[in-house]
Image 1: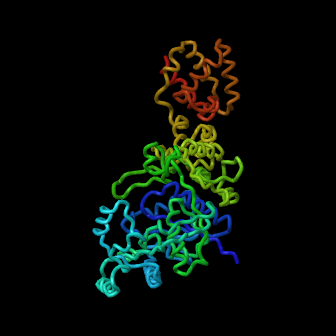
Image 2: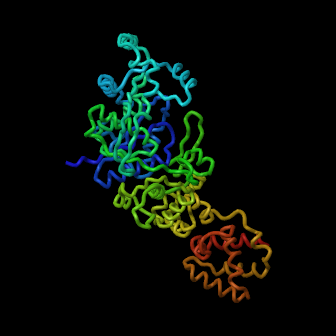
Image 3: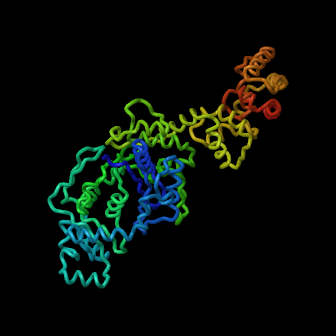
Length: 502
């Protein structure tokens, strides 16, 4: 019987959620939904020194915004809980004890000061095959001394005992056959002095307890794979081991190294899904959501960082991504992050979305600027007029504010050098022609006829009319603007501008 697909996204609640983390969650989600499986959120909070209040709720919020909410989580619960590792603390020591009993792990009593002295004395010191015999641990101390230290509750950790001269091999669903020389892997800590497990022990124990079928995680975890595989074997669970999928890195725009928050700060774009405020410093790091990305566009662009469906298609709904997704189409190579391309995705999603769908996003963008809009029907018409001009959601404010608030300033430099009394007379006359109920084509027809009657070419009058209505050289078709503003507002703006131009 084929194993039911159960996958997990297992972040640590230590701060903002990097777009690489969201992509890992997304690929887990797509794989689960593709195979009628279960997508789990498990919070790996065993490192209490790095725990940040509010980070877990932030992670949940990010996933909800993206539309990739889990089936089981600390919030939702489920049959395999608890879903916070800190709440599973009592379950891990038995496995550390089992590993010690079988000779695959050992107690290490070295103090932090002793380890620091060793690091100073030995360049690139690692605790492992070559050095463990020089350290204070249950491999070098007499059994009586070990028991005495334990009886006195002497602070200690439990380390895995990496075997000598072995090759740990496995099949990665992206990378194929992968091997590691155990001589080059150090003896990682499995259980800390406070009784909390490290990631290495907890992730294996929890993946087994939660019956995880496939492990999707970033390529940066590849060096940990031999430790985890040995733990699956040493604990007697080799037959239950999940399949491995190590995702390619998301790289800096120049391709030189993994994309970091620092890169985003330096280059002027976000790397977090949503705004994150550090509770200790109060520092705000901007996210894609608050910058003005639609969640559908954000998910779409993440999916294309390291995956494609084998065609030239670039725009996918979440449903289409589930339908098309396959591990075989994930690239081994890292994917360069291109912020201009990211904005292109957002522009395409804005352009292709119905005004009604965009309405709440646009109202929020105006609200952030202190402008509350209630006329939804009119706003939908405005959205339809200007959405092709918007890359980010706040662009709707810049591109559409004049529909609701008359311009306070005009681009006089574009008008006054060629402004004449005759042009003023033309616009006074044209203001009389504007009536409610006229469509853009009728207003344009009257404009051209009146221009001819006043001996003007329409082209030399279009720019002044636009600036009268919006204040500058931008916006959709000028006659569409007239229709949307209505006769009373349009004529009021024309008369006000004439006075400013004279």
